[in-house]
Image (tube, rainbow, N blue to C red; front, side, top):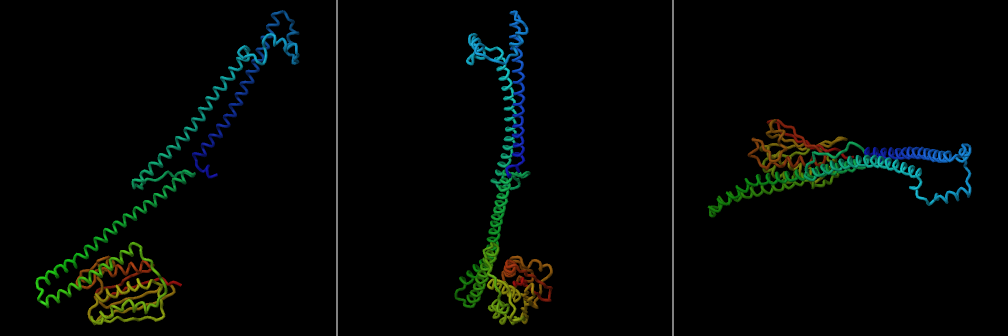
Amino acid sequence: MNLFRDKQIRYFFFFLLFFGLLLFLCGGILDAIQAKAIENLFLSHNNAVATSLLEQGIPKDVVAQAITNTQISQQGNDLLISIGLTERTSIRFLPFMNVLQNTTRHSMLLMGICLTVVLFGGASFFFRKRDRLYQQGIQVIAHFVEGNFTHHMPQMNEGSIYRLFASVEQLSTILQSKSETEQKAKIFLKNTIADISHQLKTPLTALSMYHEIISDEPENLVVVKEYSDKIGQALERMEQLIQSMLKITRLDAGNIVFERYHYGILELVKEAIRELTTRAEKEGKDILLDGLTEETVFCDKQWTREAIGNIVKNALDHTSGGGKIYISWECTPIVTRIFIKDNGAGIASQDLHHIFKRFYRSKKSLDTQGVGLGLSLAKSIIEEQGGVLSVQSSIDQGTVFILSFLTEL
């Protein structure tokens, strides 16, 4: 039975079993005491009768016959009635019976007191141990309520109470996890707001300055045209920053549900770079594709297109005029890889481990376009789909980004 898995209840049951045996033992002892008392009463009564008859000169053989006689008669009954010995005669008028009654009563009272002390002592010990266990649980729960999860419920044994404690412990773990999640969410929100505020400060300051310049020279069309273009660039930068931060925030919060299907890699890449080809032409750069047209990748089309576009845009930012960007792919039974390679300036070894951090810009890229979120966003997109985004680069040798997706059969 599950009840007896609890060691305290098991011990209390053994105590009750012992008490039952003790009760039977005491009953046997009391029976023996009463039998001995009856025997003594019988002998004492016969002794008194024999003594009285002998004192009256009754022959010994007659006395012996009277004492050993087992037959009863109406004459004997009438004699007893005549001297007042009937069934309704009070025991206090029967000296020997009165002694027997007192002896039996005292024995039963003494045994009853002893058994009661044993029963209440054992029960008190059990309930005191149980109450101590409850108090420990109450104290630990009080710590949980205060948000202190360093204490733990008693869980040394088996039984219903310990299963209850284990459930409370499990609940505390869930509450602790929820509390930590809420704390991380607060920190995340705080850091996100701080990042947005910090990144928006520069373009907002620039917009304010450009507005003052235009206001001071409203009739100078050259100045107005120049700073209007700069205002447009600042606004575009702000829009790009806000959109990127919103996307990263949604990814970090786990609000994105990726809808993964098989898509042709060639079409996926073409859609990802469609808006970047015009820029590449203006800057005198080439984007070259190389791969089998029938190859597919298992991914979310919209978000993977975003990741590829961000990486290609980063390549354009760090490739000088006349540079080339190569996009190729390969498929194996296990993994599908997309390679995005450029022949730009490359990445220094000390910067290589930091390029996926938000807003990170090396000293050599401070004058390039972008807000420092593209690679971080791309890495989050790929990894949230179970993929891997890695990079290989060295100074003046170009850079290659590798997008790896597990093949979905």
